Length: 75
Image 1 (spheres, rainbow, N blue to C red):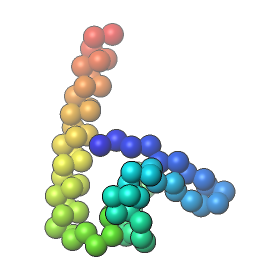
Image 2: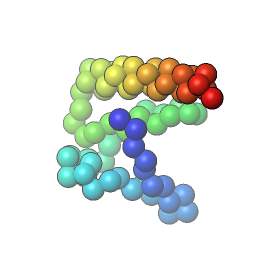
Image 3: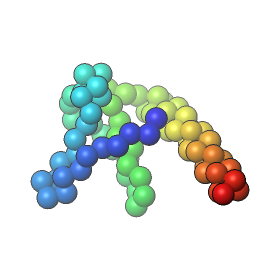
Image 4: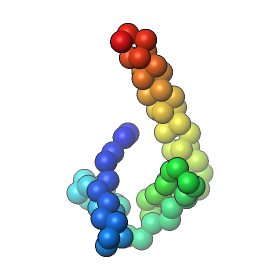
């Protein structure tokens, strides 16, 4: 679920990996933003699906937090 996106700040461009573009990320997209995160929404996605997706990402982040804590304990 975690992906690296290349950002060219000078040109104000975010580069998407080729596989995402081939999977429908090939048009203007909406984004939901705060000071810490950007949620970029695939074109034509319903808000209900966006909410479900954000919930899944939250669960993924919870797992990563637990793994990080476990690694710190083992060190």
